[in-house]
Image (cartoon, rainbow, N blue to C red; front, side, top):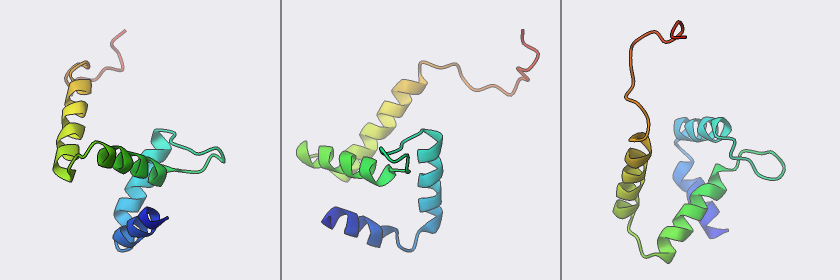
Amino acid sequence: MLFQQAMERALANNRPLIRQMNATCHRLSILDQQQQLNWRAEVKSIADAARANNQSPDAIRHLGKASADQLLAHFPKPTNRDLTDCC
């Protein structure tokens, strides 16, 4: 409960970030059992795991970027070529 209150206070003046998180959550289908957007629970889960592993905010940011970079390495580089007539 305390974490949720702290998160609400931290986000109170950042409506664009809330809209961005809602849109990302919707795009990735991160929903609870009532089919409601549930990114706040995901953020808490990440924070809980970071605390359990004694990881600093800087370490978490680095791990997130490294994880994304490793995932993106499995995909081809972006192209400006029109791919609609490729087949």
